[in-house]
Length: 117
Image: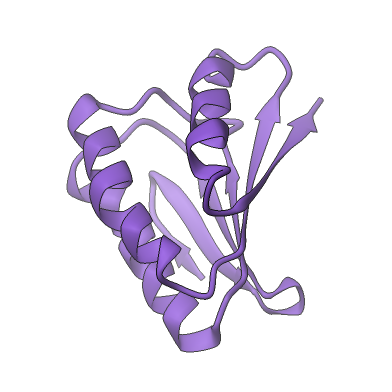
């Protein structure tokens, strides 16, 4: 498990998954760090599912969105990852952004939204 003031990232061995839970806004290196660490775990353990809990999520800075889509997602596509899950509240202000990501990522992964009440 990797725990900072911005997020918690853990390997859920029984589900062959990574769980990233955002805690508060961050950008740049703090934003990119859990994805890099998660990618190492994906490679090491042949992880098939990535889960992001967006309950305390935030709108990304544009530079981080570009990095996410143009760099790290390309590496995720080439990995053992098969499924991406977003945990999101029905009234989340991020719903539009997450639906956009679902559409973009759906070409490469099974993408699921899990609604948190």
